Image 1 (tube, one colour):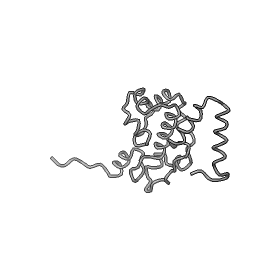
Image 2: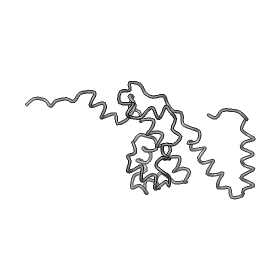
Image 3: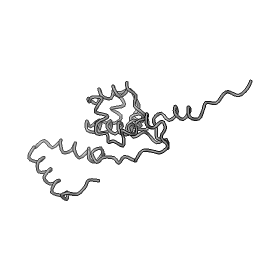
Image 4: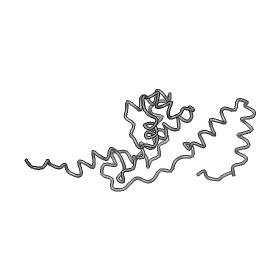
Length: 161
């Protein structure tokens, strides 16, 4: 008997890419969706362990979803929307045009990676923890003064990182 037939390199690379960039990095859309999962989970004060438990996963799987290393399937996205109390569209909100252009249907023939997307200041852990701490201040007058202090300390007209 002869050796088994090899599949064409094109067919193998299309199937193996699973929407990743030509360099093998996660697709920017998967990274965006994962970032939105992390944002919502953090705003709710939920740990990765608690989210994993609610979904019947390990916290390592949640970590991979949040980094975009593992793609989130439709049924899992449905479960995430229920556990995090958001609509499915929430995960796709605030997506910039470069990220939209990185759709897997466009990546099939891509030879270069899409432009690197810079993480928004609004999804950084420090920002999320600051917002949560701010809203834990029960006295509205104290909260107003903290807001005034923060705005006074930040230079006017300076761009955010």
